[in-house]
Amino acid sequence: MAGIYLHIPFCKQACTYCNFHFTTSLRYKDDLVKALAQEAKAEKAYLNGEQVETIYFGGGTPSLLEIADLQFLLSELHKSYPISSDAEITLEANPDDVTKEKGQAWKGIGINRLSIGIQSFFEEELRWMNRAHNAIQAKQCIENSYAAGIDNLSIDLIYGSPLLTDEMWEQNVKTAIAYDIRHLSCYALTVEEKTPLHKNILSQKALDVDNDKQARQFLQLMQWLRSAGYEHYEISNFAKSGFRSKHNSSYWKGVHYLGLGPSAHSFNGEQRRWNVANNNAYIKSVHTVTPQREVEILTSAQQLNEFIMISLRTMEGIDFNKIENGWGEDERKRLKKDLVKYVDSGLITLNNDHAQLTDEGMLRADGIAADLFV
Ligand code: SF4
Image (cartoon, rainbow, N blue to C red; front, side):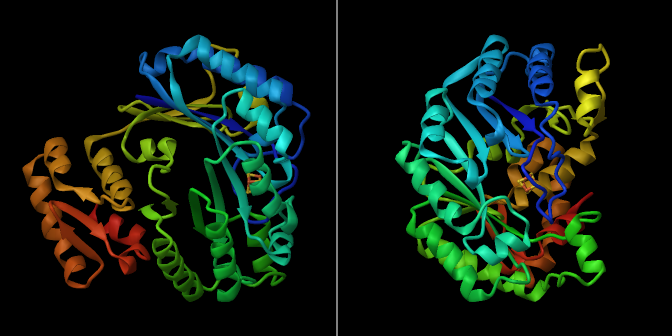
């Protein structure tokens, strides 16, 4: 099985914290759509004929594309790849783009899952983040999706911003629960270098994030969502039974995927590669025999480190049998020995040959994973 990701690098306006690749100019939108179709055709061999189970339009803001653009891209994919009849086809959408009519049209062309960047239901926070939508649209988009017959919704929420009190956070999460949202992705606000937020903090126009508050809000989140019947299947992701993201889960399981578009990443088991993060350079080079991209062949040690990092973030944790099958018995022994201090300090538990992070351990996931690397 395999997945295909398409990067749509356009947004209405720039959110202050964002470091994804996008532009607010739609000038080259048509050229970019054609280039995506061209790349899809040219890269046909990358997935080696594997059945495609998931397609993901990410960005940027893919909901800015016309229905005809999305339909064209899907039909081009069908020409070059074997796509399962029940493939999960996700469109990332911004709340201000989600009307009932658009929802029906998306459904009509085969999109069966929306991932909506709500981030907060509070007007003051949305303004602070410079989001393109308002608090009314944050709720309206959910109602419009349901009215259009799209129940398989994921929403993104951000915690730990300076404006977000614990009471507001509780209200954000409980609003999502009340709407019976099937899947939630919740991220701590991260201050990335060179973003407007970073500059605002440096010039003291914005308050910095408070790490203690972020940790507290993450612990609260886990408690509320577990009590509401969600599976916490990856550090940032929660789902009702049967509604885990198949596309994102395949990244975590090492399933092969092809990324199309500027800045998109691909992985075929042996190499990882990523396209140039520049729309013009991408559009020009996709026509040539040497498209602009970087390629990295993973060593066995890099593959092991990646496996440790990714699986530690999941509910299933690190599977020692997989470690032994992939990297040998010595690696299994080494890892078990290195884990002892985390088990003793209550950050990791061992169950049936799996090592899983405890709630407290999740707060330190990156550091623990790095310490376990070969
Ligand atoms: S809509 Fe998404 S991709 Fe676009 S600027 Fe905001 S966070 Fe970044």
